Amino acid sequence: MHCVARSRGRFRAITVFHRVWLLAFAASGAACSSAWGGFPLLYWDVNGAAPGAGGPVATGVWSAVAPNWSAAPGGGVPTAGWAAGSTAVFSAGADAVGAFTVTLGPAAPIPGVAGMIVEEGAVTIASGGAASGLTLTFPTIITGFVVPAASATIETPLLGTVGLTKAGPGMLTIDTAPSGPLTVTAGRLRFAASTPPTLTVVPSLAIAGGAAPVATLDITNNAFVVDYAPPGPSPLPVIAAQIDSAHAGGSWLGPGITTSLGNAINFAVGYAEAADLATVPPIFGTVDATAVLIRFTRYGDANLSGSVGLADFDRLAANFGTAAGAMWVDADFNYDGIVNLGDFNLLAANFGLSVGPEGPAPADWSRLAAAVPEPASLAWLALAATLLVPRTCRGSRRCG
Image (cartoon, rainbow, N blue to C red; front, side):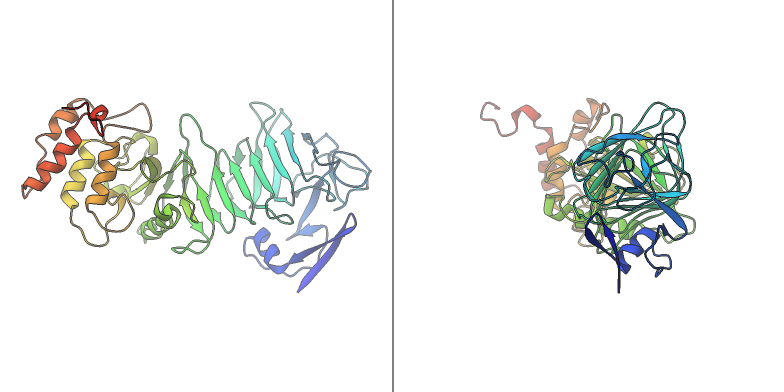
């Protein structure tokens, strides 16, 4: 059943599925109106009482005083400043189809943002100063509500305690997430790459489809902690399946938990149960035993330290030959559940390298010569010897 609203000479079909996106699976079925779930809708509109939002590039300031919000879906009525407790819709009419920037007022975070809808275009929400931010009071942000390719980039902190639900087929790029559960019901949620990498801690992570995901979380170069409530169950098996899905044979083009910086040889997404690590790397902060750790790293980094060294080789040696059920922390670096020569090759290609300033100590290279796992074998000696070949000599005829 469809409810149809006319906006600037075209019909917009608002399906029950769209409504579910916005209300995050809350009860739906209300008739089309100026409110969703009790929240009034305010439409971005920088051209006052004229119809539409102000053209393809509807750049303007978002504040309580800047008159850039309309109560009418198509514009054409006098505009006013932001009213807390409203849902922000980009944009009025159907003309804001280009890339444009909305700059937040500098005085304080925007209060009472009851979710956002990006219907078309590519909107960037930019910081107006050190005090800028968006305080979410409802967690859902929809991108691609009308035009599936519509996107939003939020370059300012997302504040609040309601969590975040990414909905709609478009992309949403953020720097930080508000406190609370993180959910991706459709499309792609991307955490912007940063230096140093950012850490996001959430009590739960849900991606539509579960172990067979149909939506995507892109961590780029960042780190995550899913700090689930004891005694569990742990989300580790589902998270592992979502990373395997995204890996897609090394292309990192599948749905699930991915990194847009990944490839088939060097960079990947590592994961582990905190309790399975001898030491939790500093990038994850302080965590308890009931936490799943996820980070961008190199293939071969079994202990999630950010570098590939002897400790990772020891894990591979201890688990070599595992025929099923292996995880990243067991040295299954290609996500097939097996620890074999394929995983060794990935570790060897990255041994001595890191994703940051940290790296294996020079002593790792000499200590590796003595790292012969039990039971000792000539095969393992050969594998260790492969790693001992200087990196500049691999594949070079000049090495004697």
